[in-house]
Length: 256
Image (spheres, rainbow, N blue to C red):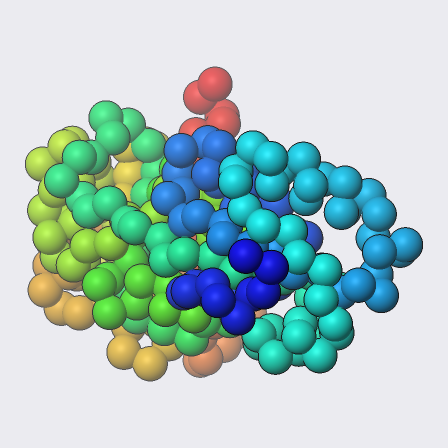
C-alpha cells in the first residue's frame, strides 16, 4: 500500500509534538491508539531530516507506514496550519472505565469542559501538575482528539484517561477511599486552607453550567480560589483547574 487514500483512520494528529507524545503514550501503556501512517511533506525532507529519522525508527517498532506526499495532501487531512508538514493518521483510542480504581493518586473530572481547545489547555496544566489521570463523560470522549492533542501540547495522548459518568466515577473513587473535592463558592473553603492530600478526586465544572447539585452533595469538601481584589467574575475553567491542581501538587510535595 503506497497511498494514504486507502487507509481507514479515525483521528489525525498534527505535528511532531502530538505524534511523539502518542508514541510515548503507547509505550507507557496509557494509550491504545494505533498509528496507521505518518504523512510527511516531500518538500520538508531536508529541513525535517531529524524528525524523519525518528519517524523511520518508530515505524519499524510500531508498524506504521511513512509516506512522503505533496503539501496539498497534508492540507487535505489537517485541521490546522501549524503541523509543520507532518501528520499522523491514527485509529480511535479505546478508553477504560472506572471499574478498576488505582489505590492512591490524584484524579480529576473536568465536568462540563466541552470545547476541545479549553479541554486541551486544561489537560496540559493537569499533566504539568502531575495528575495521575482524568475522567471524561461518555459524551466527551475526545471526539476532536486532534484539536485536543494540539492544544494540550500532546499531553492528552500521554495521560491515563478513563471514560465514565461523573456520578458513577465519584461512587467508585469514594468507595476506594478517595476524598471527593469540588470547586465551588457556596459552603466553600479556600484551597490554601483545605486538606488536599491524596488520594483525591477533584471535580471542576465548566463555565456554562458548572457542577450539578447531585455531585456537589457528594463532595467531602468544596473549595474556592481566593482573589487578590474584589472581583465578581470567575476564572476560566482551564485556569481554575490549573491553580487548584498545582495547590494539590504543593500540599503533597510538602509531605515528601
